Length: 432
Ligand SMILES: NC(=O)c1ccc[n+]([C@@H]2O[C@H](COP(=O)([O-])OP(=O)(O)OC[C@H]3O[C@@H](n4cnc5c(N)ncnc54)[C@H](O)[C@@H]3O)[C@@H](O)[C@H]2O)c1
Figure 1 (cartoon, helix red, strand yellow):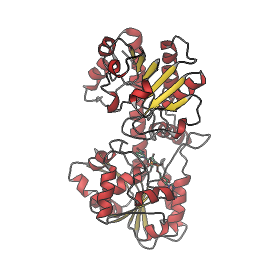
Figure 2 (tube, helix red, strand yellow):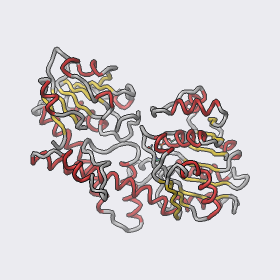
Figure 3 (spheres, rainbow, N blue to C red):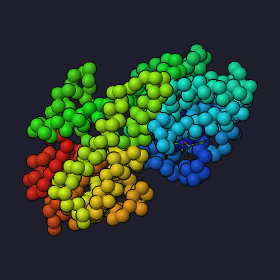
Figure 4 (tube, protein in one colour):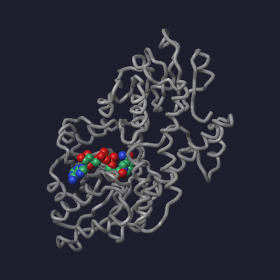
């Protein structure tokens, strides 16, 4: 089939590449000229394990192309995926749908034959209805079907998640598009993915409800971790004991920093805002958002306590600054709250991240990037393990830095306390 992905970011690029690998002809479009230029040269602009190899393979086989020409790309395609951003509105909490509606307007004048228009972007309930209205304005009646097909991939595991999804959700109000899409996803369904066909509005809500639920699980265990710290209990025992109950499940039950990333923070706020519009109070999700916002403050207070309230001129290292491992995505990472707050209190901060230096910290006073774990820790008073990259999982701190003793605050509970203490270092973690 001829597919067009509009928006070549984490979702558009990964799903476009994977669809081409399944034998479809795919054009990935973006308005960012530099992104497309670099992709045409075989350079992938994001860090996602395995993606580069797959891009090169499918470009070679002529199934995958990149373009900035939206109109031409739409005209040649049968199925159009909208994969643009839906960030939180500036000065608000609802989803900013400007990018989605701009694309819909461009689409409305380029429908030359029957096309399926799919929102893969995470969009609030009724967005599909609005897109349909925009498309109808240009006399396109019966020439299109608007479908919701939310994406559930996780950055860092995106190719695996796309290729072996738990489920494929298709929200369409007509059978023709349902049939075509079941066929498109056929190779994944035959490998075991569940195919779920719902109304378009239900599919839109499934995505938000899923993200809000996962965010709730993380926030829940983070609050239980707080209680464990006060009662001398290891939160990991709680996670294991709870997670083995099949009704609960063990995933997303690991205590750590506030949840971040490009989805949970914005999607929890957006679902609350949608519900408010429909006079429905999502009180559970509201407390999750509040609790998560407090989480960074709470962990910062623990840092101040570890440093005995003397933060000025203390040398602090951050190992990892992305919101999770195996991605370069900095959106809503808790390091964006913690590092500026510590810098404001006079700390001198060095950080190392396997995906390199971050523009977000360039203008922050006394914050610098070190290009190795060793260089980032040298001279440090306190090392904060912020992201659970494999690179940080078996460091022999004592051998690495012989000149000075320092304290470790392991926000991901990577290490066993006894192991670090045996190296003569002070060690703190979360919920144990
Ligand atoms: N990142 C994830 O892990 C993830 C997972 C599931 C769902 N989602 C959802 O998918 C959507 C996209 O997320 P993302 O992380 O890929 O965003 P992103 O910011 O990485 O990519 C969006 C791309 O769209 C491009 N774009 C915007 N307007 C355009 C236009 N008119 N024409 C062509 N290109 C245009 C931008 O230049 C950008 O490259 C969001 O709604 C997000 O919530 C993201």
